[in-house]
Length: 84
Image 1 (spheres, helix red, strand yellow):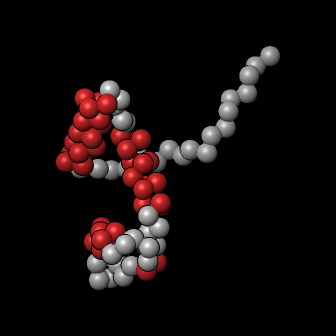
Image 2 (spheres, rainbow, N blue to C red):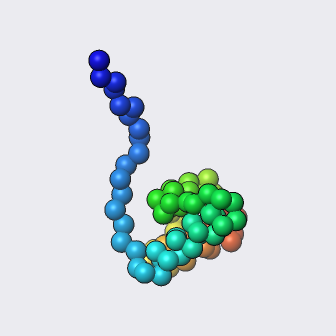
Image 3 (cartoon, one colour):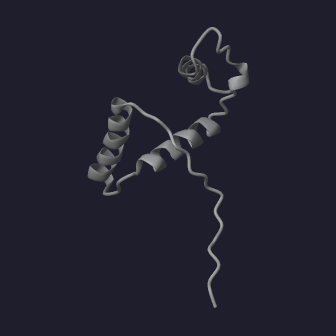
């Protein structure tokens, strides 16, 4: 009898990052390893960052992307208390 594989709700996402962005993710992973003995994968770091934005209650519908970039709008929202 074959065991059924557990279904998970995870999706594979392919992203394009520049060298500095990849180096930044790798530094986070390595710093965590040397400080806590646990290496975070790039995908785990990105997943946690998405979860962080979700928990902050960021609402991009309130951003004016004709005036500012997504990054600028997110930073402004976080500085102003997040909940838009």
